[in-house]
Length: 212
Image (cartoon, rainbow, N blue to C red; front, side, top):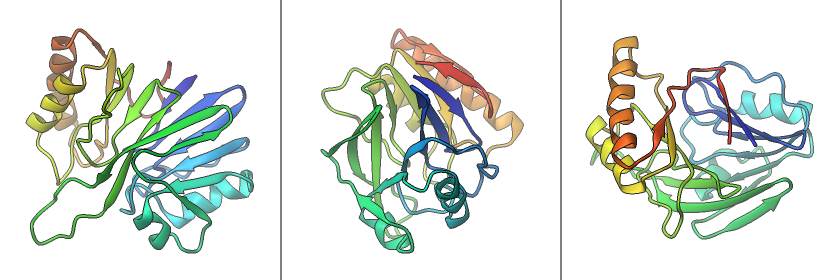
């Protein structure tokens, strides 16, 4: 399976000529190469993780692609046929196996309602928590996509999360809210945390790919 990182939270997984997109949102350049997409996973309803325009572009290229998200996404994206997924669900959409964890977005502030959020484990290999620190219980994570910057987090939380999950490999995501200097500092801290657990940190940039 091959992973390509896009800007911010968007990821592309490819296997056997098929594609899976995760969180194609407003901070990601327009997705135009979407032929042979079998599924799109949207972890939660915030626009930096999905937009109608991104979904339309994907579906124009692959009209039979399945869309998956929690109840909040089903409501927010009511113009699209989103299949609801909840923590504990497993979905098979060949050649991808999707397992869902978590359930709730991290707290941004006491004045802002907490929304639905699911983390997704793809082919028992890549885990992405969305906007949460949900640990996939009972899973030895091979590769972790870890948030590097957001209004709902501080770097100490990301470091502690990596220390708890102990992935064999990790890379930063959700970083478009950071300056160049901030991205570098976050990468250094996350690299330290990954190494503490015996893993390797890969400083992927938008457009970079990685074989999983």
